[in-house]
Length: 168
Image (cartoon, rainbow, N blue to C red):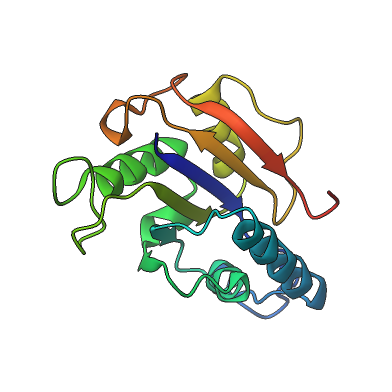
């Protein structure tokens, strides 16, 4: 069964004098992202494919995860912060290529990581699972089991398998 990991970027600087898309991570954000990467690798959850927003803070979060075996696609539409767009992107990425979903390398996409922004990632998790934690702080992640495969992913079809915040 495929798994989707939905990750909100780590803590970013306030960005005085910077465009929102250019805001970098804070020291805390860099630490939280590194710890999240350790948790993912320790749990054997290295994704086959990563979809990451083009914002500086999401790219830096992904870099700090140290998921060197993953294929990465930077997608500007994630920054638009729309849960329906996230659903379309995940379905397309999981389904692309060979039957069963491929990341373009001929390997099936068993685990896909989406690195994005609130409020869309929080709403996206809720839409897929029918439930979500009350809050989705920076560097929080949800692991969602996708019964039936990527092509069957719709509102209410995912199962929330795990939720983690930097406080855990």
